[in-house]
Image 1: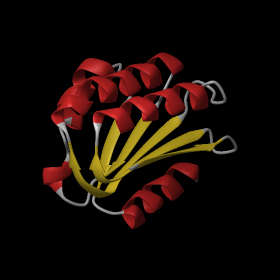
Image 2 (image 1 turned 180 degrees about the vertical axis):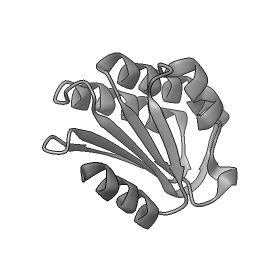
Image 3 (image 1 turned 120 degrees about the vertical axis):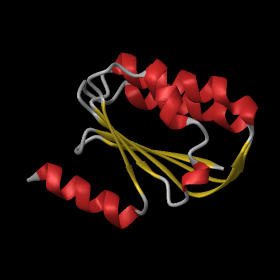
Length: 124
């Protein structure tokens, strides 16, 4: 399962993964992200929430890479990941080195509350 949420006013995009995620779902997610990016301005924030993720097949990685590349090309400035269990990282940290510019800020939080606090600090 996945959900893509566009927040135009905040110039942000949130992707949530939950349950057992398949390659077909990540392909569809990439399509939704591609559409959502047309409504965001360069300098946007990407929030990736893995709170509900149980498992993601390794064959999802090309589509995750595609999502990263699409966001990088659209001018993502910050990536905020919510990963309550470090074993759920699914290789995102390593993939970031290859799919985001070096000036993209990447932060990982253990909870949605911690992410909200970081977002509130950035808004001040």
